[in-house]
Length: 107
Length: 118
Image (cartoon, chains in turn green, cyan):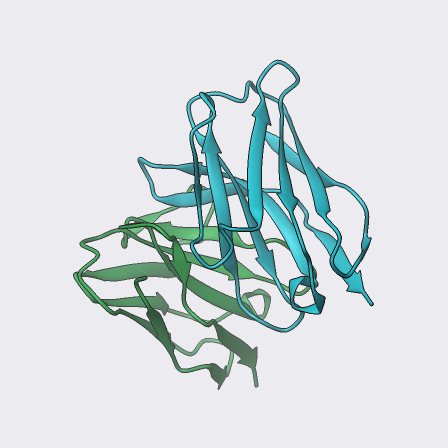
């Protein structure tokens, strides 16, 4: 199985701050990486797919980059509604696997 | 737009079989993989398995011996059966559509909490 490791596990930042979340795959997954946002009691929502493509309707302050084993999700200017847990997921090979999540809190 | 809705018992006894259905509305159940995932309270996401519209299924090896996913394209739903459940199977269970072209799960159902009781 491909292991996905996210860092940090939690981050607290102020409105307007730039927040960067990293995701590392245990082997090369090319660009087969998706980022999700999950709010309490809700299903995850796609933000970024194939590493850097912004899902329709997602604010442009979210961006993704990386390929191979190292990926980042950047929130360029944190907003109150961005308080959530963020997950990465690899789609390179079965079983499909997720990172452990990063909880983003607003100071 | 396509919507998914999970249904099934919220309480299952230990050692028995968990059965859930996902009903797809707003479009035909074609051309994608249809998947089940779960999330224990306060924990991360786990992919259980997927099935395509010709009935070919793939499962997470960690659950493969206990899981069966089936599909009914005529009635636009797919199902999950998990045998010999334990307390460790207590989780919110989600169904979702999976696209191999994008590699992502979208959309998702709202999720259904299944509690395994002793």
